[in-house]
Every structure is written in structure tokens, then in C-alpha cells.
Image (cartoon, rainbow, N blue to C red; front, side, top):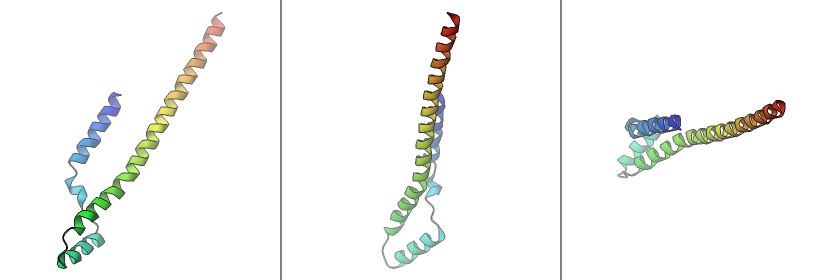
Length: 93
């Protein structure tokens, strides 16, 4: 549990300090600059939000898969310990 809290804290800290992560690729930047020349100013915010959305989703999926794997391994370990305890108690009698 302490590891989970430490990792969660680090992730939150990195996300809060990621002002530079709102950068754009060259094609997106060109699109924003051309649209700003036409007088529209809100295109950049939408592009930045879309980029961050596409960036975060794979990491969330990996985290969910990792959590499920961890939970299943803990469950399997508990079952192995239960069987080992039953075998030990059978041999002791």
C-alpha cells in the first residue's frame, strides 16, 4: 500500500508540473498559426486538450492492466499458501 501511495504521489507531482507537456507537434502548430491568422483563437486549446487525451489514455490502460495482473498474482499466491498449509497440516497428523 505504501508503494502505491508513493507511486501515486509521484505521478500526481509530475502531472502538476507538466506545463511544458502542453506543447504541440509541428503540423499542429502550423494549423494553429494559420487559424490564428484568420482570427480564430480557440483552436489551440482544443488541439492541446486532444493531444493530452491521446497521450494519457495508453498509460491509463497500462496501469489498469498492471493492477489487474498484480491483484490476480496476489490471489494466486494466497491460494498457493492455503494449499501449502493444508498439506503441512496433513503431514503433521
